[in-house]
Image 1 (cartoon, rainbow, N blue to C red):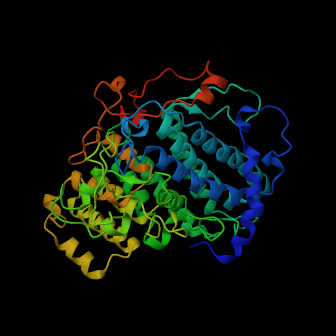
Image 2 (image 1 turned 120 degrees about the vertical axis):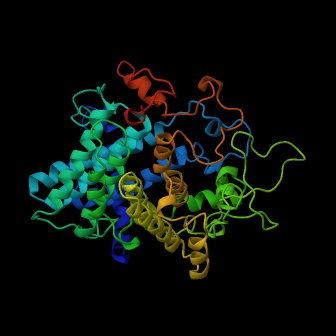
Image 3 (image 1 turned 120 degrees about the horizontal axis):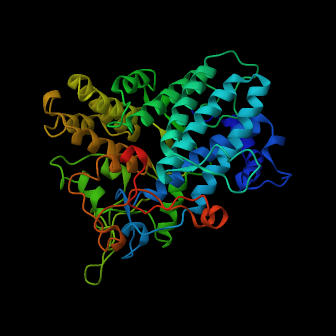
Amino acid sequence: MKLNNKIRAILGASLILSASACESFLDVNENPNNPEDAPIAGLMTNITYETSLNVFRSGSAVSNYVQYLASPNPDSGSDTMERLDFSGTWFSLYNVMTDLNEMNKKAEAAGSLHYLGAGQILMALNLGMTVDLFGNVPFSESFNFTTVTPAYDDDQVLYGNVISLLDQGIANLKGTTSISIGNDDFIYGGDVSTWIKFGNTLKARYLIHTKGKAGYDANQVLTAAAAGFTTNADNAQLEFFEQRFNPWAQVAINNANLLLGGWISEQFIQALDGTSYPTVDPRLPLMVGTTNEGEFVGTVNGAGRGNAPEQGARSTLIAGQYYTSTLSPLLIATYAELKFIEAEAAFATDKPKAYDSYLKGISAHMDMLKVSAADKAAYLAAPSVSMGASALTLDDIFKEKYVAMFLHPETWNDARRIDYAYKNFTPPANLNPNLSGSLIRRLAYPDSEISRNGSNVPSVTLLDRIWWNQ
């Protein structure tokens, strides 16, 4: 279900609530804007909106690491994997979780099980994103307003919380509720059956991260996937409108106005233009722009545009395409992603199922981008794409998932799980020497958190791995 016209009118007023959680997980003083005074419907509006933006914020933080994007300037810290300060992303994630904590308490007290279920699913998503970026983080003491220095919880324990929240949320959405979700829900407009699919899709996502760890069970992933999305119509996304539009569109607009950003990595261009793989992907011109000469030219991460005469036009995000139109949806989770998760989970025991899911993932993403029927058929008929179940490899699955998850933070989780082993993936030029030739494994804890809660902040380096990547 897509965002309908009725909820557009309430966005401006509802977003006033966005200030309510600002830094509140560290603030024990009385706050006149505390979300405990906000209605459930208003909280839901702000939470669904800001959760979608948290996906963008996280994707923007890591898109250079997986070489979707590259900086036009040499030695950019985002390219070369330097220690960067992501205080803004950290606070945005915690602000939403603070609002969720309040909404869930209100919903439980009122017997509003559908609000509670949706809130638990969104808490799982925001917590999962936070753990995947930073590892150990505060959670159990973050929302009780009794300490300004909340303890850090173990990342593996927090993953258990993520799965538990998803299970609880799915169960509550199946229950009887005193108040129904409606147009205050910017993701599904109150469609409870699709919320249940969303919860199962996220469960498959977080379970697949644990592949190779003790307790991993591929059948659990497949069971969750079977109860997840069934078509692109189920995609969890936020649709924009004239007053507030897609932030990737703003990146493209800014670049056109010479506020440089959204330059495309050579790695991504060459994954689709026939360089790294034998088949030219018809999605490329629907995802990124060309030079004035009509060519796709990527930027080498860490090298920028180089020096004259190497400097020249490069491909960038351009306004008006699927990911960069002002009214483009901001994708949270998709049917295409779920099919690739299913393909990976089935690969070891059921190659035909894995192959079928792999092809359905490609097809679903092409349908999202409105690839022509002829181009889609030609691509799927290419021997390097439709190689048959017996010849399918995990590399094939991850390559196609890499394309389908363009600009999404989930790709960094995949990249770390496979040790950045995308075909022809090379470290950026001028790689941070503190990494000793290895590639980044986590974000550094924000400077703001170190200054406020330094006694609890774990001592880690950019090479210390999240528990599921150890």
